[in-house]
Length: 576
Image 1 (cartoon, rainbow, N blue to C red):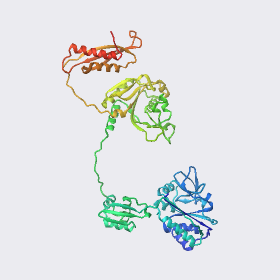
Image 2: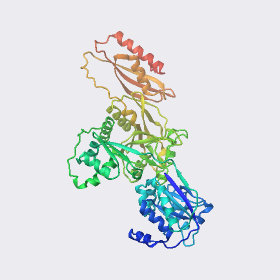
Image 3: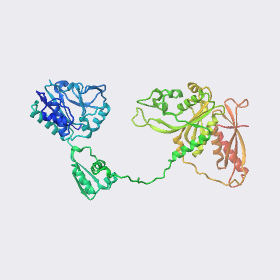
Image 4: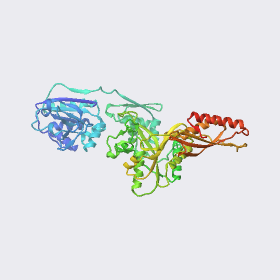
């Protein structure tokens, strides 16, 4: 609140106001009521400063408190209407309750009546935006609120009070008590705006002569001088609605005449539009998936608070740290999702329940991970992709092929390791790395999880960290001439523990063969009666080739020995 002045008048002698005052009010469209109310209205019309008079004896504890309304407070205004107030509405209250809507209308309970003996007279300046907000929220528009919304002069507040007291004295309407309540945070210093005439002309699009601009501003009591093309304008306190160049331009144009505005062609540079690299990559992924007969889906970023429980995640899993919505549409949309899998499973279940026998779906969206809870800043929005497939011809390897195609498209070299996601089948899931960075987890949905969604057939899902894949720099394609020298093929069969991944063996072979390795091909995995308990037989074709010459027996034997040594270190035993 910029300024609030209050005075007390006792021993009121309420009667009709003089005929000259009544005629002035009627000519202005206002109805005379009594001398006190008429004085406040007359001063408002004369000075532009709204005023309000309270019945002093009706004020609880004889207090005047300028504050915002409290939750659940109500007020009955002078027109007899009841209003529910909110905590962003400014009121003038006594010791117990609101007595006036600040800048808009007084309350019924503190109304000046014929038997009122004492009054508290108010003259104030309230913030324009608060009066406007309260008036619109309650649907009230008054003479006072219209003036406060446009802005009243903070200096004029005191003059209006003195003028009202003068009229009370001259019309013998009461005894004025000494003492003044005047609260403000300091009166504003003179404001000076400096703008160029060119900037005003550019904004208006009308070529107005400089001397005419100066003349108009001065005629509006905005003292203005010109130095070159720089305008210096002193803004009086009564015009606190003028804040910058646009306001000065508006003042000039409304006097110069809007009829001077003519249509002109738009000007501006045309910039060739393009997509961001991330968007280009994303579009390529979508094209790849659509080419694989997958349907793109779009699901809500909001999910049920308990949906995460269906994934059987550990209580300490970061995906359980969900951001809660303050005003959700319902419990089904009460949290921001930290993963896309629950949404994909819902889509798969819906299609299966509608007797659709097979389907491939994908979604590219974001998951929301809070930096900390309770939330103090915006959560991380991480680009993520989800894939879901089911049907008679779909299996683990179908999904693996899709993920590998996406990684290859973006230039990533894939590696596979065991994963331990509780919502996936323990023996049919894998962690994917692209260029040694974890980028995806995929596999068959755990039967218990599938059952919780009403799914009675095998379904396969993948969740891909799209931010990791999009950050991969695409490898340059290097073309080599066809080999001049023959390759040497060697077959190796090993016994290893069941839980040793094939990828571990491939890394060992690659390390042992070095630059002579051309390719590795897995051709057999066997577990049976001839294999010891807890073991499996793994067989590879290994192709060796030199770009410089035909391999000698010594080179082949040396490479073979290194391969066997590396495999032995990895826990593999050569089958005899």
